[in-house]
Image (cartoon, rainbow, N blue to C red; front, side):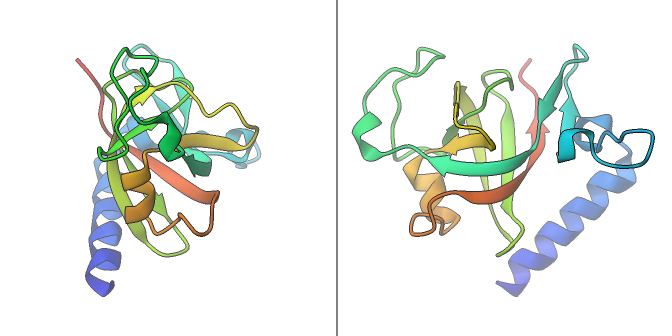
Length: 146
């Protein structure tokens, strides 16, 4: 657990030191976060929400097609986001436990207010969020699709 905390701290420090706008926070004139949440700017200039609630797919969705056309598998590290391009690789961090998981966006959603990402069952289990249901997370865009 301590090693995980150190790794996340090093990663966040490196991200800030690089000065990349991909994971910067966007602030209003008074210094507050835009809509109270972190955002990332894609190559095309569009902004994407990077913090909020995370939920996960029920196992009953296993085998159904996602918005990208890919078949959902509860045993893969995938997720749904409303606006991030399909194929975007995201690190999902639970700031309460410092656990994190790396997922690939392959679907659209969630469509419940306050939620920013729906995780596969495997990713949710890695974050130890299955019993807790919806948790607050921070997203870090690791890789934009080509």
